[in-house]
Length: 328
Ligand SMILES: Nc1nc2c(ncn2[C@@H]2O[C@H](COP(=O)(O)OP(=O)(O)OP(=O)(O)O)[C@@H](O)[C@H]2O)c(=O)[nH]1
Ligand SMILES: [Mg+2]
Picture 1 (cartoon, protein in one colour):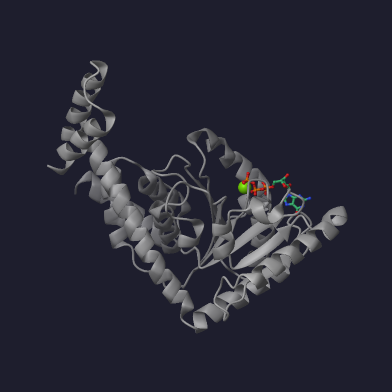
Picture 2 (cartoon, helix red, strand yellow):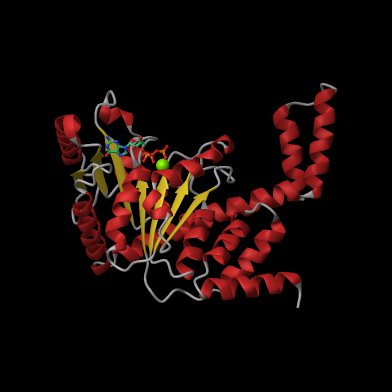
């Protein structure tokens, strides 16, 4: 048996036996930029059966510091009351400099981090385009194959990629806080348009009143802009991830919304639409890899660099030559 085959076999057995160490290794392969790792991962992914239990994928987005990780820690406790197996993926769209946030995320979720029923995995920020990519989807599928049926994905949602957290979530929660300047301007309207549930977090103590008025502002804004299908009006809520106030109500709302979506087939339609976005992203990723690893591109790059040093040729012309060498 080839080495690659034995790796695939052992990872597959591990994943089917719900071994999280195997899951973690498989994720590392999925996230690797090396083409040999990608080949192994893709073969493994092909061999994994579709999970028996249907999963739910919930995206949690919001600006840095809005309380996403704290919210996940709190709602995670509700989720675990229900005999669910929870995986938490945190995706940092910022530069590789921010790899340190892995530790930060785990300390923001101490109860979940210590719970053996929970798998927490930070995704590298140094992905192909940053932020959510088709690799996030690969990771979700690996978690589902390992028996995790409830997937929470945390991301600030401002990657450079075409994909957003909405491309991998069945339901998207947007966390906001009050008192951050011109509140309706502060958030990228793109995210507002795709969020299913908008919660004003940190709504406790002296902040409660401000949070209530922020909530009203958003409710009015949503009323003016009929951005979502009228069959599924946006849910709005107040909560405090810190005290846990409002969190169990939000979990009830999330479940009821998901149930409605499932009954109407909107759930499946949404997943099917996401597949197209994923396909495009995966294509771009493979193209990028093929380009970088192409010997003729490397040769053309070297030639172009020499030309630049001699002051010959313009950047667009040289770039065209490099692309032409790839397409040949
Ligand atoms: N008062 C109050 N503070 C909160 C609440 N939720 C979170 N915080 C605090 O806000 C800070 C940021 O919380 P995080 O959960 O790390 O926020 P985040 O959105 O995950 O941040 P990034 O991962 O950096 O994008 C921490 O100091 C939390 O303790 C809340 O409901 N009330
Ligand atoms: Mg966080």
